[in-house]
Length: 92
Length: 263
Image 1: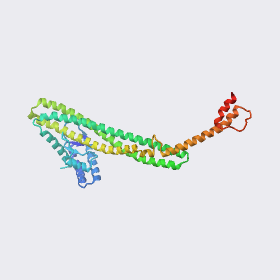
Image 2: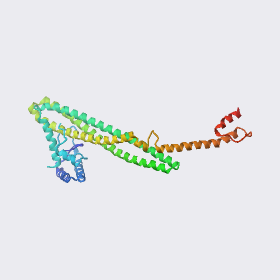
Image 3: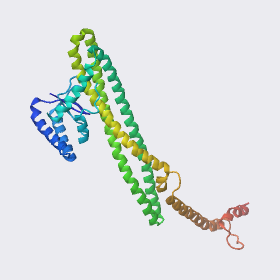
Image 4: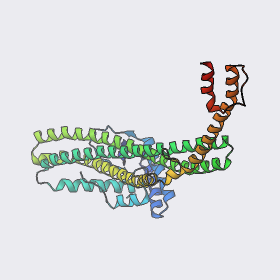
């Protein structure tokens, strides 16, 4: 599957990693729910690291869309909230 | 649904809504390509804007650094003439500048990071736009409107996602740059208003400089005076052994007298 980290690009990640990534994703969501900015930054960093570690870069000229999209590494809780509401996205 | 799945769904929905508007999907290819080129221009302009801000911060940093260096020199000078009070004042002012310099350094490295990120984003988009252009020509030449639908959808969603990503990156970089511009503007105003000049001006004399200059010009005069006093009797002795009437003349008058005797 293809995973995009916003601001960094796309990575090809093995399907077998999905459970691990979902678990890391749940921690990010819990931190957003709790409005805990410190826990959020840590959880997001762990999730992105997990993707970077297990993934390999997709060729830059590929036109495939991603199965999963992750927020940029320096995102705040508010930014992710906006992202989930679909704000500020430019349809191409 | 997980956060990462929800975000990708939102991106896809945006792509689809843009695609659904056109009657003949092939028309959207050229339109989309134009938008991609515009985005490419936008992200390159973004890189240039961030670079401009970075250079401005470099300039300010250098200004503050030279002021700080000058204060160090002043402190050394003050110590050499045993004016610890002046040295302390100079060092106190220097420590205020050191904080600002560290702040500018942090902003500088942040902007450098943004610049690198945007440069890479521009390269990625460029590669995808090029790939899309090739695909677009093939689709237009080969398929009927009905057949084209699926192919276009495939090419479209990938580039649309990239556009959304790059668009966000440019927006975020702009926001960050704007915040820093405001702070840089405040420092420029501070420099222009002379508030920092008082602490340490490069061109105009500040109070510490004035005092040190006053002291040093005074000590220059004393040193020259002492040198003249020391050298004039010897000069006179060397000129002749003839008994000198009255006592030694003042230093400044010595050379004409010397010449007079030799002539």
